[in-house]
Amino acid sequence: MEQLSARERIRQPKRRKKGPSYKYLLFLGAVSLIAVISTVLAVSNRIKYKNQQKTFIEAGVTDPAYSFDAAVKMANAAEAGGRQAVLDDMQLSFENGISTTAFLRSRFPDKIVYADDGHYVFADINRSLPMHNLKLSAFSKDDSGFMTYGDAAIQTHRGIDVSKYQGNIDWSLVKNDGIEFAFLRLGYRSYGTGIIKEDESFKDNAAGAIQNGLHVGAYFFSQAVTTDEAAEEAEFVIKTLKPFKVDYPIVIDVEEIANDTYRQQDLSQAELTEIVITFCEKIKAAGYTPMVYANIKGFTSLVDISRLAGYDKWYADYGSVPYMPYEMSIWQYTDKGRVSGIDADVDLNISFKTW
Image 1 (cartoon, rainbow, N blue to C red):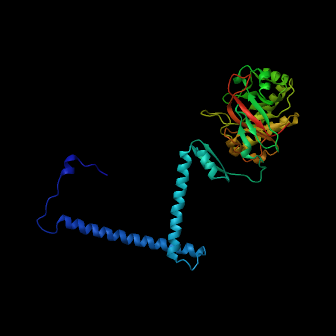
Image 2: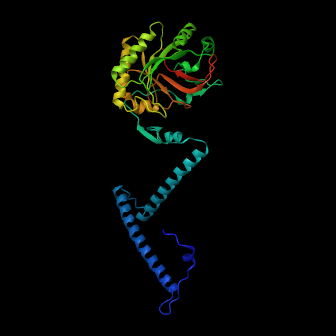
């Protein structure tokens, strides 16, 4: 719309010497406009009426206790009431501090919902896959921040996973704090250069954890982009493990790199799944138990979980209960845990399986 100058805004219309006054013309214009609008609304309502009538007839709404007009009014009222109920539900939830993600997950129980790059993904649950049998109401945290599970039908174990970033660890204190198992980062492939490196603290952590009687597993952060590279990573892991007696699974860690480019970012789901399978099969052939680590996006879209049914799953999700519906062996529930003998934050895990 054009903006008028100050001068134009205050200019008054000139009076005509002959013909009807401008007020009369405005009145006639208003009456005509009302008539047009009424006609349009009448036609629109008639079309809507016919469409609704057709819908009710097709739906078999023939109860003689109600006229068609009464049925239409009830349907419109229910529709409006339904919209308002949804809005009231959203408002109350958000006022009580429920996050958007938590709200959507609770309202779409037949979908896997997660945030991804500024939008939400609503993925179908694959009901043909094994589902976990965990009772979500049985989960709670004790005063020390450790997750507990109150159903005696499943025996759980308390564990951590560490790398060089946890510094020098006093494993005797870790053991005395009730930690039963530890997954140690054995190494990683650089997501930029593609060079394989051993974690600087792996050997010390392995020796200390084993000496103090913890169950020990290892994980490798993969950035393989071909199955040949995946086999190379597995062979590196097997060679590095030889001096140590580990009794828990050997894990391939597949995850995105936040806020940066990385080698695996353009792989298709099928390609990354083949990489995971190649690694796991190499580990299995060497006599170890293979395992796959990922978060909800990883298990939902990065890899094809239906092709990984033969491997244990280690699931990362920092909520109050595990959200993934599929069978899992370990749940990593926080990266802000505190454990005696470790001066830094540490990942805490609860396992639902004994190896």
